[in-house]
Image (cartoon, rainbow, N blue to C red):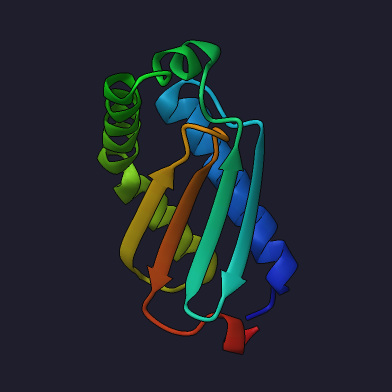
Length: 120
């Protein structure tokens, strides 16, 4: 692999930011990607809108926002998996994601078919 770990992480962050803007209509405030063994862990900050924070004040609203946001991400995850494959050369075998309605951060974990970190 010709690229450094940092270059790959930056490229993944850029692709996810662009995907958010084009697919979801707005991007997060910050994105940080880390390659760890056979995983890519991404933390997206500033995901929720002020209106979503307001809705999250009660349990029903909180669950509603989490469900809707997770559905939106899951509906477009194949496009992200293809981008990760293009950047890393490795297939994404599983995807995990959760959203904090307190901090407004989303965590995404892409489990790869091989240990990418050892190849860098």
